[in-house]
Amino acid sequence: MRRANFARLLAPRRHLTSYRFVQNVPKNSSDSIIMGCVSYDPAVGRIWDMMRDYFRTEGVDFDYVLFTNYELQVRFLVEGSIDIAWNGPIAHVMAQQEADIVSLGMRDADRDFESIIVVQKGAARTVQDLDKAPMVAGARDSPQAYLVPNYWLQTQGVSPSITTFDIDLGKHGDTAIGEVRAMEALLTGEPKAAILSKMMYDRALANIIPEVDGALLAEKTEVLAERPPVFDHCQFDCLSTLSTAKQEAFSQALFKMNIENPQHKAVMKLEGIKKEWKPFRPDGYQVVASALCKQRRGYCTPASRRKRVAVVGA
Image (cartoon, rainbow, N blue to C red; front, side, top):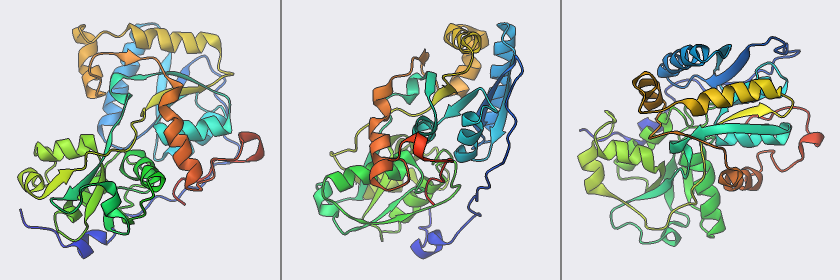
C-alpha cells in the first residue's frame, strides 16, 4: 500500500456539519413510541426497520426517526418530540445536563469501551514520552478517539500537540472516518502517536479497513501499556416524564430478545450485540462527564441555568 502524504490527509474531504436549532418543535402526543437515532451509516436504517418489525410483533406501537447529528437528537428528546433517543456517551451526558433523564438499556458491547494510544515503534515507552509530541486523533467530538483519552493525558500531565481529523462532526465519532485518517497519517511516519479506539485499531490489523494496510500497521506501530479509562457507550434515554406504560413496553420487548432465537439473532448481530441487551449503569459515564467539563465544552453548568443544547466541538 502506498503511504499517504500527511499534509494531504489534513485537507478536508467532506463538509463539516453545521447545526441550526429548530424552534417550536412539536411534542409527540400520540400513543406510538417514537425513537430517534443518528444515521452514521446506511445500515442504521436497515437495523431499525428490523427492530421496528420486532417491536410491532411484540404488540408495541413503535417507529423511529433518523437524525444527522446528536445535538439535534438531544434537542428533540429534551423538548418531547421523540420519546426515546439512542444516544452515544456524549449525547447521554448532554441530555442529563438538560433534563431529568431515565436510561432504559444498552448493548453488552457498550460496556467498558476501550481507547488506546498507538505509537510509532520505539518512539515512546510511556505516555510521559509524548509530552509536546505530534499526535493525531479522530474527530474532536469523538469520546473514544479524542475527548476521553485527551482528558486522561491531561490528568497525567501530558500535553501533546494533537491534530484532529474533524470529519462528520455531530456524529461523535460514530463513523470512525477520523480514526481511519489518523491511522493513515500515523503510517506516513510524521506523527509520533495516535489516539484510537481499540475496536478500530483491531479492525485495521485484521485488514477489515480497506484504506489501512494491516500488515504495515502491525510492523510500524505498537500500543502503549498505559491506557485511558474505559467508559460505557450507547444507551436508550428518555425523559423521566415519559409515561410508565411506554417505558415498560419498550424495555420489556427489548430485554425479551434472545440471540438464540433465529428471528432475533440477525438484527442483534447487526447491532453489534455479543449475547444480550444489558441494563444501564450510571458509573460508566462519569469520565465522559468529567472530560466534557474539563475541556470547557459547556457541560459544567447545571441544566436549570442553560437555555439550549450546545454544540460539542464548537
